[in-house]
Image 1: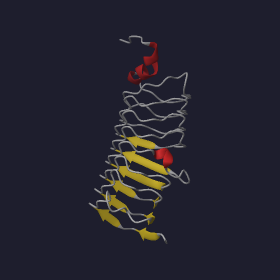
Image 2: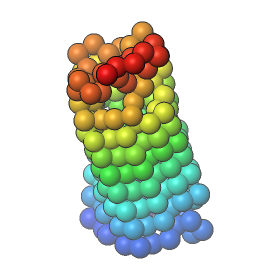
Image 3: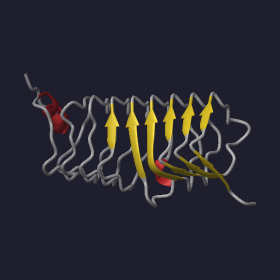
Image 4: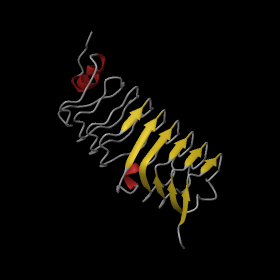
Length: 190
């Protein structure tokens, strides 16, 4: 079956939970308030696309390409990003709920997570060098053998990072955020 090519199209309030998004290449497309939850979004190619207010909860994104893709105010609970195609991967998140998502072992340099809820997200063995987390809630996020060099955590909060298990050279933290580096020592900072 031949793939279809869409360019500069808008998909508004579409429900793809039962009827799958047609397989193909989507370039410069905009998806607004679409439902993909529990559905299949696998083997798709997205280039310079924007998803706004979409629900991806527990969707299958295996082997999909996300090249210069922005997610704005999306619900992305439980997504396994490590299953998507790493080729040309470039993603940006703003105001998204990424709780329980997994980025295990991924290459995500210079990735921006702005004002996101990222509870229990798995960043184990992920390379985040030069990324930033402005105003992002990282409660119970997992950082284990993670490359956090030059990452900006200045306005991030609720994180717990063990510097002995992660690369944190030249990472940026606020004075208030330093407690997130000391939690394993069970000391009181007043």
